[in-house]
Length: 70
Image 1 (cartoon, rainbow, N blue to C red):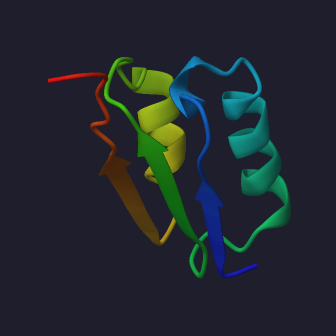
Image 2: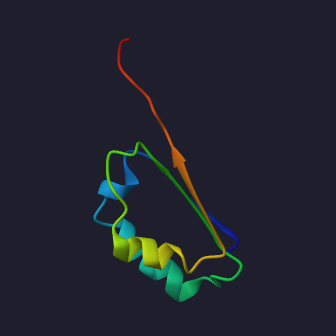
């Protein structure tokens, strides 16, 4: 596994996100795996999740700023 892209809704609000990252830490070679997360920045990344994500070779946090109306 080289790349994992997490999108859709607000991933940082999902109760499944951290268990999924735990799963990746178990099965992926973290020295070769890149993780991308697209967020609307409405939620803060917890220190625990931050520490887990830092075990991967590359992390990309992308911000999506969609709006309604003006």
